[in-house]
Image (cartoon, rainbow, N blue to C red; front, side, top):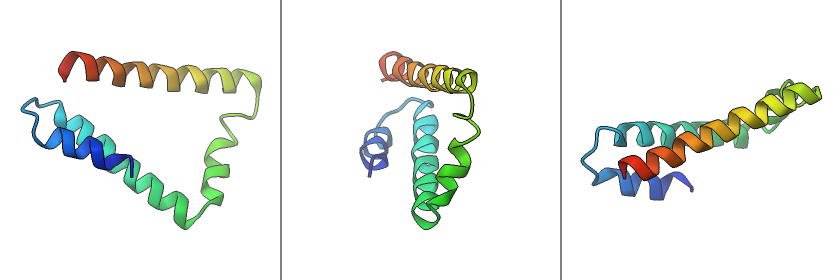
Length: 78
């Protein structure tokens, strides 16, 4: 459901970066399908990231960096 507004917005934008957002939206869809069809996969994916305190902090930093990159892309390109 989150991919729909992203794809609707990127469809009419003339920047080549719209392909990055479209690809990201389709990756969200595939991950959502996998998690709905096999919920145990979420536990298998997350357990190595939150096993220790150091890994949890690194995973949080990586997610924050990815979010900052998307925010930059949103403000700079769109």
